[in-house]
Image (tube, rainbow, N blue to C red; front, side):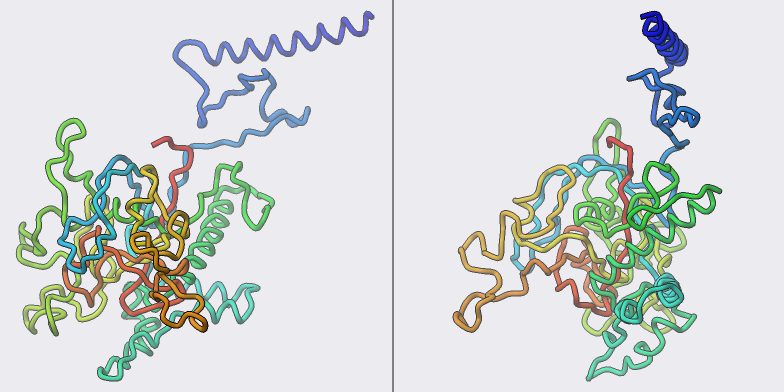
Length: 415
C-alpha cells in the first residue's frame, strides 16, 4: 500500500512539474506553435525529446524550406475562365469563382539543362537502361516533311547554346516522372545540408524531420491559371480589384507600353501566318522558335513566360464540362468522375471503345488519358496566350510546343 501511494505521489510530482513548466511557457501572450512547440506536451504534460525515457521526439522546424526555383503564390478568391471570345465555340471554360490555396510554382519553365541533369543522374544511378531511355525527349517533334528543321532535331536538346531554352518533346507522363525524381534529389540534398542523417522510409525522408519539402508536381489547371493571371497586381484597397486581365500583364495589348522597351512584344508567339519574329534588323519578339526562359518580363507573381514560349502541361484530365463539375475550393479534375466518357449534353460517348461492334459510334480524343495544357506557344497566335484558354492532348504525346514547370503545396498553411 505504501509502495502504491509512493508511486502515485512521484507521478503526481512529475506531472505537476511538467504542468508548471507548461504554464510558465504559456504565460502572457505566448502560446505553443509549430515553430515553438515548447518543451512539454500541452495535452499530457510529458516532456518532448526525453531520450532517456523514450519520449516523443519533436524536431526543430522553422517553416517550410524554400525549394530551388520556386516562387510563393499567395492563394485567395479569383474568377477564372476565359475572358476571350470563344472562337471555337467549345464553351469549355466558362467564368466561375473559386478559391485556391497558397502554393509554390517554378518561376521558369524547365529548361534543357535541367533535363540533361536529370538524364545524367538516371544514367549514373541504379536505374535500368529502360528507365533512362523512357526519359529521353522525343527530338523528332521538330521533324516536318515540308520544312528544314533538321538542325533542331540534333542540336536543340544538347547543344550548349540552347541550355536555358525550355525542354520540349516531353510527354505529360515524362514530366510527372521528372517531378518525382526532382523531389528525391532536392530532399536528399537538403537533408545532407542539415548535417543530420535520416533513415529513408518508402524511398523518402520522413516528413516529421522538418527538413524536407513536399512533392514537386505539375500544377492543377486552376493553380496554373490563377498564377498566370496574377491578379495580385490589380489590388486596390480592401479586396477590390481595379480590373481583370486578358493576359498575364495589364492591358489588352501585346506590346510593352512603358520605358525603353516600349513597343516590344511581351511574349514569344506567332504574330500571324508565316510571321514568327518580325523582320531582320527589328526582330520584335526575337525568337523564331522557343526563347530564353528569362527573356520577357515576369508577371506580378514573378513568373516568367506564363504566356507564349511553350504551352505547359497541367495535372488535370480534360473534360468539356469541368467548369460545372469542379469543387470551388482547390478545383481539379483527376478522372472522369461525374462525366465519364459520355457527352453530358447528347448522351453520346466521347470515346468509342467498341469500334468493332459499333463502328459508327461517336469517337474523339477525350479519354481519361487526355490531359490539359495551358498558355500559348511560339507557334500559336495571341488568342491562346490568354490564361483561360485550354487545350488537351494524350498524356503519352509530345510536341515541339509543349513544356512544363513544377508546383508544390505550401504545407502547414491554412490559406
